Length: 332
Image (cartoon, rainbow, N blue to C red):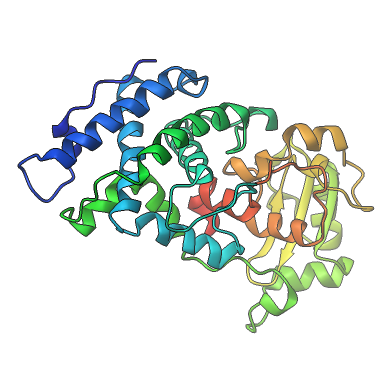
């Protein structure tokens, strides 16, 4: 895919002034150079990219460099948030040494990754569909872009005339993540529970079976559990769950009873007869990527008990994956 050409006017759309200058012309030209690089890579050939999308990506990466040379601190603030939550400047494993005030190849990998998933909203159907920041396709493009930006770093002009509130626009897709990073990381340890009286469903399940996780292979097993253990009437059972299988019930002190169908294959437990290591490797990552697959509180509980050993997050922080792909439910 060939990117639409970037003109100086495209660059100054986000500036606080209307007249162009040499700095604007420099960054517009740099944006075009970046686009020419991306066009020749496998990354630029990924689905969902259009000429306009590649053009915007070229501008984003130029703004990234300008952010650093001009001390806007937009990107630095985001990495500081990652550091606060995860103890590392980026939410994925990287080998390169990290410099907080300079261009980093790992930053570019994350920018390319986030931009791809910003425009690609199609759900993954297999874990192998997932493209991580360390994927070879992204790594190849990020290395070439890094080589260009680092060669320009020492001589690139700064731009201190940009209005602060407009600076963030170049990372607008990622400000959404910054806002989600404001939520406390979910703590499902005993000390993380509320001191409020527990939900009655939690109490009933704990009294019935003495544990907060229950595995039920079939809908008939689910119906039997609800009627025999919790004394539900048959008409109260969830008819919309007929045809589903491998249920997991989680008794949560605050939310009561959470039921997730079709996920038992991914969970390793002596109480779970549905566990299948190969299926977990193929599809388990979808719990983090696709809304509606599993309540986040349940997913965190399974993580805490180390019941998801076969799920490969490709070096990415699992909490960040939830915040990124399942923003709607993370704060619930």
